[in-house]
Length: 140
Image 1 (tube, one colour):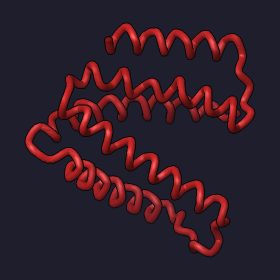
Image 2 (spheres, helix red, strand yellow; image 1 turned 60 degrees about the horizontal axis):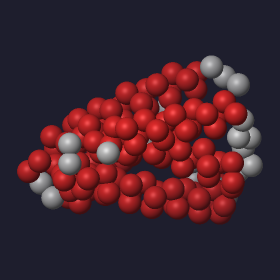
Image 3 (cartoon, one colour; image 1 turned 180 degrees about the horizontal axis):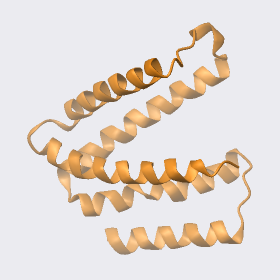
Image 4 (tube, one colour; image 1 turned 45 degrees about the horizontal axis):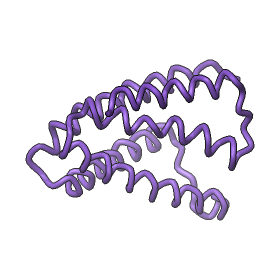
């Protein structure tokens, strides 16, 4: 497995942290749903620029129906997640919202084992329990 995935995962965590901080400030004086809409426009623009600059555009008829279907479902889930996240940030401190949001790590491990058949080792199960415990400690 290519070691670069760790750099991207660290980048994801760093940018997710900034998302919470910038989002908390951003939703202070605007409706959370409208804030999500603006955020989505920015993401669309940035990803279009990246795909265009890297020459990665692909004709839609070359994408399988299965891939497209699951990407649509992923997009719906992402949108709903963002809507919930920004609303939560409007209602509570970022330091309380973000840990609960990270329960997604626990859910991913469970869903990956159940639906994708990924192995659930003692190491992964133990770490997942620690994350869940940390979320409970920080959020309650």
